[in-house]
Image (cartoon, rainbow, N blue to C red; front, side, top):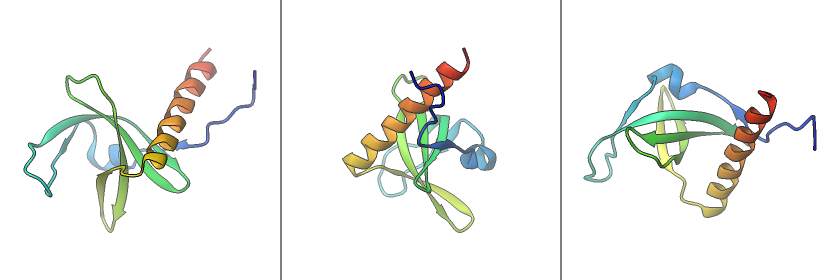
Length: 103
């Protein structure tokens, strides 16, 4: 077992500081209804910002890329399957690290 293991991402809180949680998400590009989401975690990987979110009352978690545009932050679905897999793996690493380091 590696005792000096560090996850490959780092936590951040840009969305939480700016908007709090839960967040009301609106998709202006489609006609879908607005959705309230819990902000579970935010991470930075390779200088990119990602958010882990869960619908209020839901069980599934969702990964989003957070785009920093001027003064606002915009969430985007992660389209690239390889990027999604990488970020999901980093989230898993961080959860395991948290569990291990809290013992």
